[in-house]
Length: 191
Image (cartoon, rainbow, N blue to C red; front, side, top):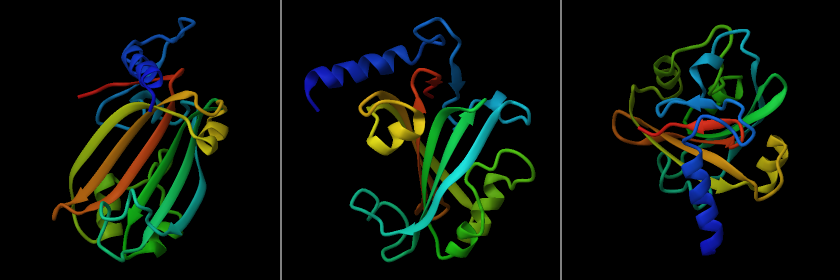
């Protein structure tokens, strides 16, 4: 990435630590260990999460060798989060599982409203083992075409990206989640 573009993203990342947007409006704060601001989890908050894609995929170069075991099936679930009808984030989660039927039957990563399992219950049901440690990283990146369209942004606009890797107790990465947030509406806290 050219130096000027990298400097601009670094500056955006530094500014993302502030709690107000460019026009002074309050931004939503996502704690370091979460995907969504806690106040949005309650029913009536105006947050809606809709599955926009769910399919089995062949792991590409980035995922191959990182997620699951060689030859294991990977299911992509993509979701759009809106707040009061306005795009807020896009979640792309990759699940390495021998139980794609569970994922394809309607299990969602972020089923926030109504009856939902705890992460531990869902992880155990899906992978047949207890969850282990998670890794989390965040950065500012340029928005790609599909994500830009979903978030109502222009291609190349800066967005905040949070990556989460969920491992089982044996240390195998079972889930990789990429969440792209609108940088004009969200602040990501770091641990």
